[in-house]
Image (cartoon, rainbow, N blue to C red; front, side, top):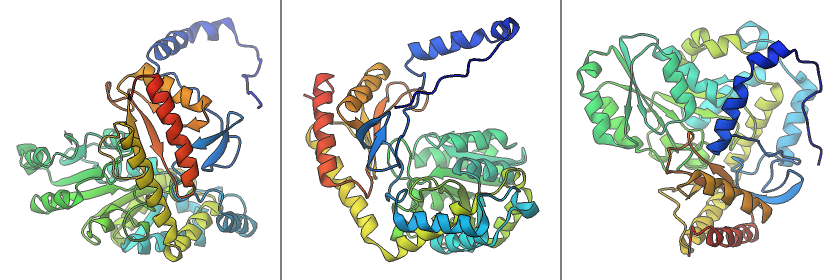
Length: 410
């Protein structure tokens, strides 16, 4: 395997002196088991991948539907490059909007049962764009679940509106906030929640959230990054899963997980879509996605519609994997989706667990503070449509072996 090292270049003593603080920061991160050296993928993102030169069962990818290496999808991307080139070299509002971008937006809106949708450069910027744009006054109020994704947190920080955080999925706490004096005075209110929570694999109580939003005149925004392509009819997401089509103002998501590419979207009304397209800063000041990305997602939408067996296989694998982990005594929290945490509760032990699994031929990443609270450290796994039962049986056997060595299970 090829190792990449920093270039040997001249750095003045003045520069070295002024950056000396970095050494201390890195040392502190290492002591807390928070210093990250990413493993390197040497193959396509597959259920069995080559990582750091080693063939392993990959249980860390968000490649839910195993579409990253699907031949029809790759062909669609290649054909788009041949027709449109490799990129747009412009933002959407100048000359970066191609007909293939609008085709995807219209098809994605149909998929999400909304009037229209708008593409952003990533799921992260989608959340930032909507929160910042809609909550741009101190007279408004943004209300967020405490376990929402970092992009929602950053979007809320960039917004001018005050923000309130409710305890995870605690509808009584949400109601208290909505009944508060600050909420009553707010001219506009937005409740923001993940649809599927990315670290725990549980699902937001969306029916109750929408009921409270209607009662207290608040908008609802759902981040369906880990739900689109995974739950609901043909993978339409949590809004559809709870039969709330047409009753939620904004659905956010990413194109980097089940849709195997990169980018994000907001699916909403046509008027709100057009408003975001005129004022949302990430849309106005970042170049649009390469046409190959749009073509990739269009093809995956097509496959989702005509091949229900893809989702069926994903959920069969999910059920098998969870049942086996529980059978051996692992704590998998409240997960009901393909995201399955194995709770460890200690940073050092979680990192050791992940490293030992890798040596055994399984890649499952440790997640520690600040991504999760202290005491909630874990191994986070995701099964995909592409895993075979044999793959999962092999992985389970290694989880059991390492879990017993570290005293996680008996």
